[in-house]
Amino acid sequence: MKTRIGLLPAALALVLALALPVGAAQIYPPWAGVPSGGKTFSLRGVNDLADLHGDVVDPQLVVFFAGNQFMVTHELMNAFRKKYPQHQRIYWETLPPGIEAEQIEQGALILGTLRVAVQPDVYTAGSGRIKSMQKSKGWFGRSEDYARNRLAIMVYKGNPKGIKGLKDLGRDDVKVSMPNPKWEGIARPIQKAYVAAGGEALKQQIMQTKLKNGTTWLTRMHHRQTPMRIMQRRTDCGPTWYTEPFFQQMIGNPISMVEIPEKDNQFVTYTAAVMKKAPHAQAAQDFLDFLVSPEGQAVYRKYGFLALEKK
Image 1 (cartoon, one colour):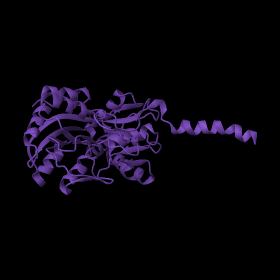
Image 2: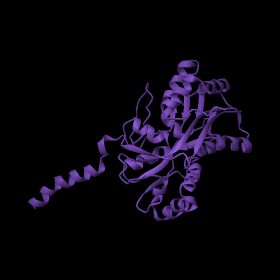
Image 3: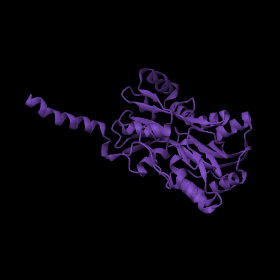
């Protein structure tokens, strides 16, 4: 009996060591700051809304961002408020663009028991999606390109699986976190990159064979779930935008990145478009002016986004 009791503290210590994050990593979002001026009531991993930001009550501007820009938006909006002090109450979202498009069509976003019935003044996404949506839906007025990005592979700090490039994502011993093609715009360029690096065979290996055997896992919000799963050691790696591992390293999380050579990489241009039915039309115009201004561009450069190509 004494022997069994003596083993309990050691066993408990082992369980706790396995359960706790390594090196005090900030596994759970929000990672990019929270608002002040009110009662904070949240529980990480249970009751937190990391993709809804700002003032949802009587906003003076509403922006639906592409979700992978979550790290930029708090600093960006603070700079915008400073330059345009007449627009202080701002609400914005950083969800996948496909989800936000469905939210616009259905009139609201429902999270648990909360219904958010706001319509955007500005919608941002990859330029290809904006052009396609304009052609099919005719939602937009003025639009502006404002930043570019490229792909990278996110891995745990030190790259313990020895990932050297996209071909390694097809290995049987590598667990991949992959954005869901149903609503994640990034899934299209990633699959093009697979083909560029290893042909259709690599794409099928990752997107079909490994998906069936469970070594490819499809995300619901890739810009949050991939680093979370890697830090929890549930996934070995994930193709993301370059800016995502760049940001995780910036805040000191145990994340590294494997860069993808230009010949295999894919680049995207982000476009912001004013909704034709924008509830706050002047604020929307002011925001697009700010995005392409030196102040707005400086924020995007700080977080690893590329400048627009000169025409």
